[in-house]
Image (cartoon, rainbow, N blue to C red):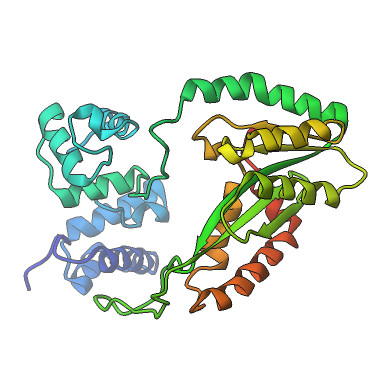
Length: 338
């Protein structure tokens, strides 16, 4: 019988051979006998025994083959990640998104390397990069104004809060569509599941305000938000804290800053103060997370067919959020507020 050097045998089987060979050797079997028993060259058995004597039994465990050197080295990795941290438009592409084809093109043009899309995908995964849906950010947003607000305005607001020992609320409005957000569900590969949802159009407008203390005030609006409905909502917050002073932070929506609103605040200046976020800066308002949670968790794939069914459903989901102060507090974790 032709003897094998082990290269044609699987790693798992060869590892078992090595361990068993040591056991047989310890029981007094010769190298020749062990080699004959497994159909292996005696040189291989001798090497196993030598390794065991010098390094112990653990040295006989199979090691994963390193494989060929990756096409993209550490320097390439740094370079590619630096590209992904910027908009693709900075490199001449029409839109700001990065896909594998664009990265592949950059690798070829800038690094002078050819790499298949499948290999590139594996490299990106290995570097802990994943394809993600980006959050929207308004083009009109002014980063300088945001930095100034965080550095100057917010410390002043926080000082005002401490001086007044006031309840702090972040306020916002949102429209909740009758057409639901759909999440993911398990299904057979290649067979896309279908979920029945209403084809009717419609939405409900909501106002809410949340506090770092875990409190939430909300209401369903009868129509669009106006100066009057905003003032009514401020009154609702005040009625929830009759013995406390209130500070509200809202966005720059025109209805929030009208003469009617300013007159109300002036008349109640000893009880309430309203401050405004920089324009186009929803990321500075933790109350935005209420809407994300409501739409993407509480109302995901809901089965309401019309506004008559939808309104009480929305109301019940908002009440369920309101009853969870720790959930509301979590919307502030990691923000400039906490």
